[in-house]
Image 1 (cartoon, helix red, strand yellow):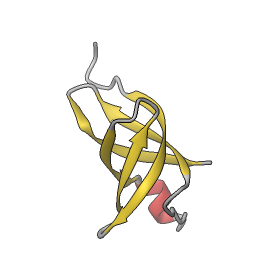
Image 2 (cartoon, rainbow, N blue to C red; image 1 turned 180 degrees about the horizontal axis):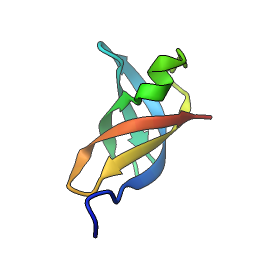
Image 3 (tube, rainbow, N blue to C red; image 1 turned 60 degrees about the vertical axis):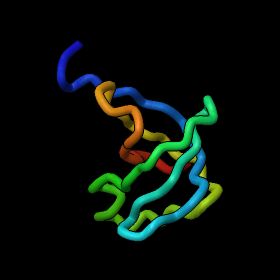
Length: 71
């Protein structure tokens, strides 16, 4: 497994936190902390609780992730 390998999962935003952080619920009912990726911040893509998103996670830390797409 290379360092660049990422796990991509679909999730639902459950709570908005300060500093563009979100609590998201994965499909397996695990709740993780996720932040908005740079491109989404650059283009002012708004994320609200209830939105379906795609989260990218590192295999080394399964409690944090990065939101890379909003459906």
